[in-house]
Image (cartoon, rainbow, N blue to C red; front, side, top):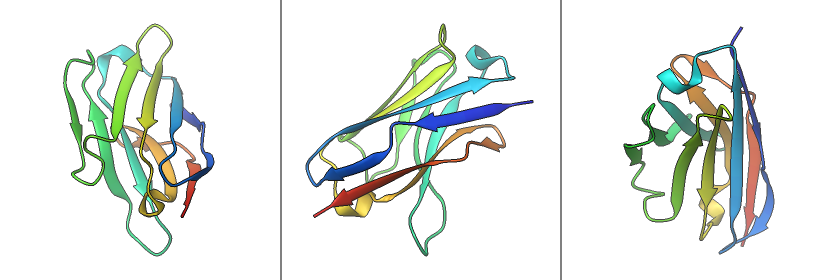
Length: 112
């Protein structure tokens, strides 16, 4: 059974940083691309970032480009999302994703 467990969310002031982690189990982690999505209150879930199975290719939503960095450690079956220069509009539940699976999410709240 695939499990994706996010951690690292919290409350931060605008301009601050957070690093999210997602520990994966039940899948051949190094064979799959991984991603992050987010869902703000009253909004649809949206794509944030994606990283290829080797880590050699990444892509980002325009809204986070230049501020967020996705990375992975295949030896630890973990994917990360480094979030810098956070804005109040980044407030959302952040979800780790692999193929059709999502984790339970971790709350990120950015105060102004």
